[in-house]
Every structure is written in C-alpha cells, then in structure tokens.
Amino acid sequence: MAPLKSLEKDYPLIDSNFQSFCASHGIFSVEDFLLHDLDALIVFAANHSTSQRLKQGIDQLLSIIDALHPPLLNGLQLLEDAKWNKRVLSTGCEGIDALLGGGLREGQLTELVGSSSSGKTQACLLSASTVAMQKSSVVYLDTSNSFSPQRIAHFVGRSSHYVSDNQADRRPLQKVLDRIICYSVFDVYQMFDVLHQLKINLGSKIVKSDHHVRLLIVDSISSLITPILGGSGPQ
Image (cartoon, rainbow, N blue to C red):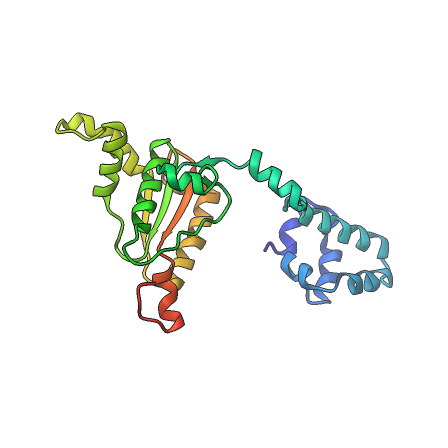
C-alpha cells in the first residue's frame, strides 16, 4: 500500500510531524497503519505534545482507508446487490445459464468442475466467444495449451454466420478474436505474476483493447495446483 509520505500533498494532516510520530512506532505505510494496534496508537498520541493534531491525522487516515472500500453490507443487501447491480454474462449455453441463474455474474467467481473430457474447456471457449461477440473483452489464462482459435471460429460462425469462404466476411471473426486476450501460464507462480501484472495494466489501461474486460477465465486451475499437492492426474 501507499507510503504515508505520498499522502502528504493531498492530505495536510499527514504531515512530517505525523509521519515522524508513526515512524517512531514502526509505521511507514498505510499497510503498517492497518496492522498496528489502533487503540495503543491513540493512547500514545494523547500523551504527545501535539496530541490534537495527531488524533486528527489518525482520523483522516482512517477516512482515507474507508473511502477506498465499499460499505459493509448484510446478507440481504448482498443478495439485492447481486440481483440488481451485477451484470450477467451469458455462457452461450442455455442449460449452463439456467443452472447459474442467468449466466456468469461480473465480480463473482464461478468454478466449473468435472472429470477429464467432460467439456469444461469447451464451456470456457464458448463463454469467451459469447462475451467477445457482445463487444466486451475476455482475458483467457491457458494452462495446458487448450485454447483453440478454431473452436472460437466455430462458435462464432455457428451463432452469427461470420465465417465464410469470403475473406472480407472474416473481419467480424477477427474482431472477436482480437477481444480475447490469451496468456499461456504453466505454473501457479507464473499465474500470480500474470494476474498481478494484469491488475496493474487494467488500472493504467495498458491492455490493448477498445472494450472493457468483462470476463477472466483460467483453464484450468487444477493443472497448476495438482503438482503442488503432489498429484499426477489431470484433476
């Protein structure tokens, strides 16, 4: 998280005096502040010569942290939020959409589980092509060389008649493929690195796409976790 010094320009109470006080207690960043005993820090501030300003600085830092996070919601509020405020993305398969209550929900994790060759990758490819056809971008993490542009072309052609022998008619297919950003990852640490870099890129809009990323697919997580757990099977 951000060092306290980086906040000084926009928040006058987080001045050099406040930073020195925090440093004397091993606090140099917002993360250090969160990990520290707040009650103890307030007691130390009360005994300081500039106690009033230090307390104001603590309050301001707390308000900064609160502003970075959404308000706490109870179970009923979360249900209503999921019902009305979460965009549903179709997987392209009516049966799967029905099981999921309409499709994949943005901001939520959906896990597909099944035996080898049960169709998990096909469901991932179909979901990717369906979302991309809706002019949204998809990030696809391929862990076992299973990503198939040919299958994407098949799904696109089957649903929209994009594929033909005429090269000009292939332009819509190319646009769909351009919206699917595929990364090859072969161990869990590489996946974490890619996800970390992706988070940075999306935040700074470095990812080359004219559309918002709506879906992240990892196909499959089991092939990355199994070696760590000592297994050798595909599941």
